Length: 358
Image (cartoon, rainbow, N blue to C red; front, side, top):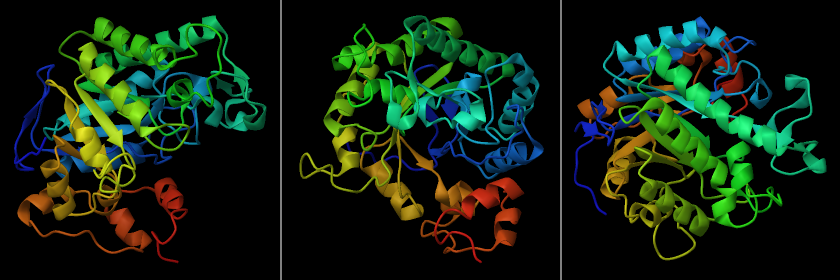
């Protein structure tokens, strides 16, 4: 479904919320919050600076909905009311610049380090190689309820909406994967059963938060036991459910071949019968040209990651200059500091090969 819309054009979602342009800050791990999950000044500064830089939608990093879903040090939490004050401050700070404020809801499952959570990690099924144990049926139901409770907490804090993280090998991906989900109950087996938890969460959030609350899902069609054809089927089912406003596809490279046809991976998903649901994608959208190409290929908006780290005002730069390209890497720590990254985030970026000088 080719798209001739400009990156500057506002976009209205089925829930009625409107982005002022077509740029979304992709949810990115930054390790800047406090160990109890409360918001730090560094994380507040990083995210509100992107709102100031004219991102139409600013999404937080993955925020864990249960304590035992914590995947890294400095992760922002949303599993307890003690997190509310920070989230209220953050939502207000993002919205002050006219951006939509959205929290990504997350649980790491078997990817959570045991030493970080002080317990054995959990998974859909026992995984001795990952040191993870199978969730009991009551624990699965509690996980569902805690995703829904976190969405209500986000709404109470003043966010415009939430995104449910169903990508990158975290717990909902683990449930979707036939490789990791070998359950014998109604949460395991065929795709409908493996996706049951995701649909119960999505429908539960919609029922709890109402029609006017922005609700999206992030999926990745590759790696972690995922197959593009099955994720496309799941994507259409989510659209047909009428419960979501947008689908966020994490593709790593939006222009790579799908491997299933002569289409790119982006085009393969762009021909979904999306009804009024909006589609976005992330993956090597580095400059103005790639952003335009992503819209032209059929996406409704673009999710910007690496270039948003390098330039807090990436949207403003692109809208001023149709040939804008981000600064080349590696960059100095001083550059990243000027762009709003704190010490912990810069330390994390030093692990990215060739990103930081020195």
